[in-house]
Length: 204
Image (cartoon, rainbow, N blue to C red; front, side):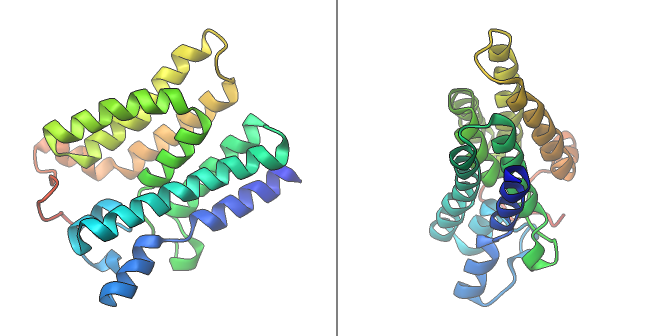
């Protein structure tokens, strides 16, 4: 029962698309019809500017944090249910029931989920990702490095028993999901046509 409730609540929470809400409030537009067409913080930055993008980033992160910490609290620290709730929140962001199942790529929500589940690995991978974004200006590359890096670090730590294998299984699923959602970005990175911060995004 706790599993079902946690997953459903997390999905519904994740389905709240703050980029869509804020874009409608500020510009009376559907952000999914502008820029890259993605309902997330990066496209908000391109379409609305720095301030709204920061707000969207923080609120989307908060969705993941609340989903995980809420599940941990109500289940007495069950790693499996907390991980499932985190995955459900990401799925909600990507395929929001309130917005015709057209959402974002779940990066900010994933940051909140991973920071809540495995803080130290997420922090280490996050530092690498930030440096990557600073030097390359590719947000998509930094996002993929963060998610895959966290998974690799957790795998290494799990060999010593530092983390539950439940976390690792869900991290692998989250990583695969993230790479699939970023598949067009990966293609453009390989071709050298991916948009950088400050450039007009290519619709995808």
